[in-house]
Image 1: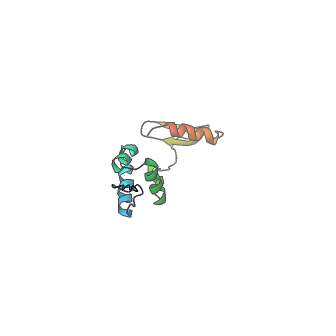
Image 2: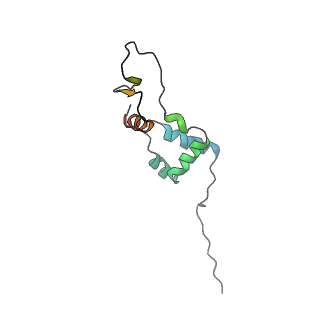
Image 3: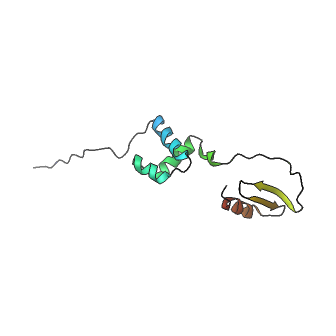
Length: 109
């Protein structure tokens, strides 16, 4: 006598509609959103949401709007001045790109 095993329940490889993908990507783009929690509620992994966001071209939405205006008082020794709400970063002309990147990432606007 042979045995047959029937597996019922949701299929592990699900098909998500474009609308469902957009809703999940929009949910993680909200201020204060927790990607891991949203992914857990949708029963998928966070990297899937990140992949959909890249595919939709929305990966750069986290960048802040920048306004460039001339400084009324020139600061000697600084080539770039970046003003955040709570901080001002003055970058000298000879600063390495790695250092500039690390400093700007550490400033939480």
